[in-house]
Image (cartoon, rainbow, N blue to C red):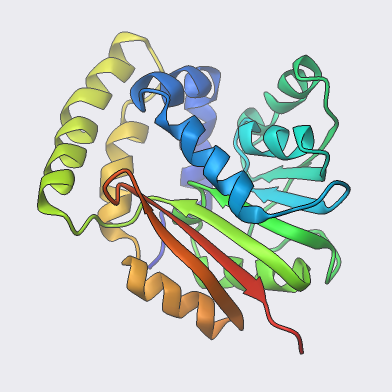
Length: 233
């Protein structure tokens, strides 16, 4: 279950960074914000807990954690996306440490974070298993891994609507607003189809010594929220 080569993904997201926030909100009808709020609640972190938001993009989830009093680090592979974060954090009057990093080789010590979160990013990592291993390594014992992601949709009606929207409507709107290469948006539904099923992904987490606390389908199963904990050794 490999995404395209890292440099290809990096280039693709670099091209759409300028209008990424607008399109995320507009094209999801604001539902992405509600999903992120669910992830924050599911993380169950306390003030001053250390949080790593991995594949953080332009920093929305990292900033939300920081607003909840967490010591937050936002890490992403794509510089153009990451570069949007500081101004957004300043606007929200919070502090976030921004680090350009590859999810498959994190520049952090073992047992560093109480929470590691990934929102709509793990699907774009070339070696998902290796990234999960790295998440496990940097989590403290008892720490939570929170993953919000699109998975292949089992419900036929929702699957049809998802593919219709993302294959036909989204690329057209992206082209109209000049959001960069429209291939980045046609890539989305294909990457979902090619990704692990929710069941297979759960098995991957378990194989990496993570105990699944919850697996929640959101908006008809369009997205799923996994919460897993690092077992005590």
